[in-house]
Length: 116
Image 1 (cartoon, helix red, strand yellow):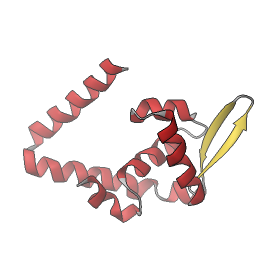
Image 2 (image 1 turned 180 degrees about the horizontal axis):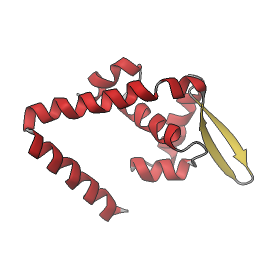
Image 3 (image 1 turned 45 degrees about the horizontal axis):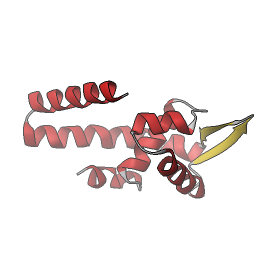
Image 4 (image 1 turned 30 degrees about the vertical axis):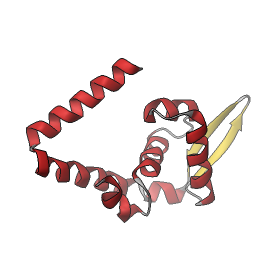
């Protein structure tokens, strides 16, 4: 369902989530993205590289750290990405009910916080 909704962005849900993280916090480090997405750093590096090839992100070295910044092209996708998230939520809410959707979202958030 997620990939179907994110098709309007031309990205998979994973790429869209990563772009949203960078758009929300320009200069974010890959380690923080890895923590937010609960993915291995090597996976994040591959995702970032693909998005760089598409001219959606750029990496900038800052001393020993690497910062990830959005491009103008990435910023233009911010609204469609947020719309896709809303459509996805509405879609699964329609299937399982609004109360269950809210409960699911809350439970997932709590589990992620405990894992961190």
